[in-house]
Image (cartoon, rainbow, N blue to C red; front, side, top):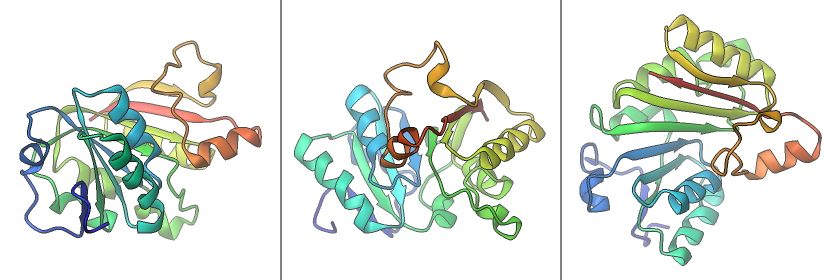
Length: 201
């Protein structure tokens, strides 16, 4: 992956340079914990007027998204391999417009609560580089994580736009919300309803 133009593994001094890399001033959207990059690719295909960066630590999973992006010639998709706890070091203030959190590890133990990707700790990191009124999306099968995320957003007085515990029963489901990750496809096959939360920072 190190030889591919759109892959960054533990890079240095990239904060504030992403629009230069993409060679435009388009809004930048992150997929946090992107896994195989299904959502990063799906969004990049649907929104050529935006730039997308998938972030994960597991290179073997990311490889699938990276190779597909290369094959499809998606110039508005990139991948960043790093520890999520360092995410604030890779972006400058107000450099990012939107975040997608798609089927993250729910970290069910209370001792791991701060590692949840929608925890206060992580939101504190995100707000260091998100634009004002930035949007955060969460898709998950896990009810505990969903309830936790809603509670955190409410405590922080964020504006919740959408909250549902059964996404595919809603009339507003569109082509974007219907993008399915490997995990989502698995959970749907098991009959587990998908939860979706969208709020503004």
